[in-house]
Length: 193
Image (cartoon, rainbow, N blue to C red; front, side, top):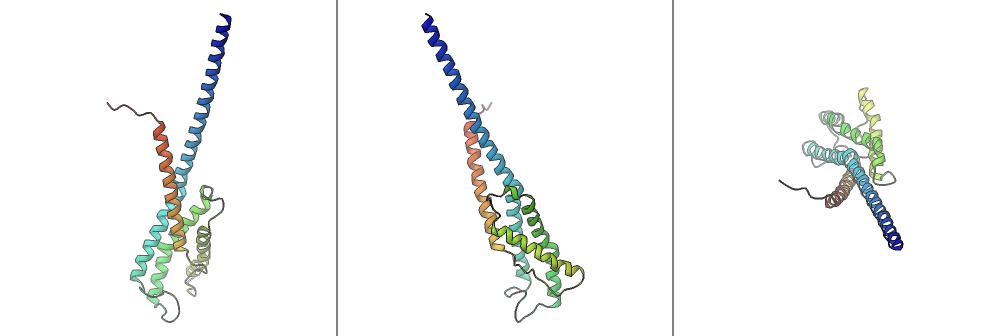
């Protein structure tokens, strides 16, 4: 009898320990997945979602602007310079539409860089930041009614920013979907009454 009691007690203790460790590691795995989902949600909500929306709206605005203003030819370049009215229109759109949007993207990048997917700042975002800061000198001249310059020394990296924002947004949305599907699979279904 003593031996069967000892075996029963030992088996009970082993099963309890195994159950404890299985529960512990399962909870750890669930916690890690939830932490990952929280980070992905934060990346989408605070950086990549706004960056994607702003870069797309900027591109749509630019295309609309160019379809009406000097369509089919360079705004600035060799040969056919813009008229004074076209220059006024350029300044209006740069100061009220494009630079405020670019400035918002710039501030997002600076304030939310901890949410980047990459371990280093992507080239598209570095060029966007450089474009915005270089345009500040042009805007300052305009404030002083000096219109000797009209463009930034660094071109806006339109397609690079659009592609980067879109690819990153879609990658994170896919990851979010996968994490949510796994979470829903592990949650027991509720009864509908």
